[in-house]
Image (cartoon, rainbow, N blue to C red; front, side, top):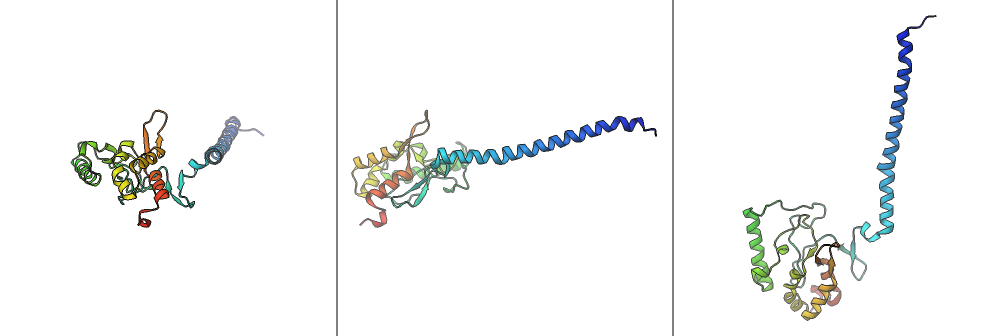
Length: 209
């Protein structure tokens, strides 16, 4: 029986294409399992083993082993017995991080900074020029928990009076809460750690007489 030469010629090509597509599909499935599932699980396991504190969110616990926050997320403090951190464009919400996107020339940003400067000057009894810039402007993330040592120092008199502690004691607590941000970064004070140390030393403000 005679065969169509065209069909005979195309049959090996069709079989080769089918094999190629089958191989490609298997490769895609394998790579999806390896890179999409296996690799993330491996990295998560290694991170939890090598850096358990960081892998779980750098959580901070009080003296009673209660989680009070994260070393990476700022919190709102209003009581004069606490050190007060940076303003937040995200309302200190870790699920809604972000800056205000207001440029230096924006009048709204200038008005906001001026209002904060007036409030801080009255609250801590300092001149406008003594107020570090981070106390007047939110960070890019909106949840930065750090301030400069200078930003903590201008609050010492207020907090020490409210807590009944000496300024020397306060400076020691600030030093203990100061972290080096990276090898080339500047020292910064973690406000949450500092306020937690204050509560552990004198008790929360509500429990003080």
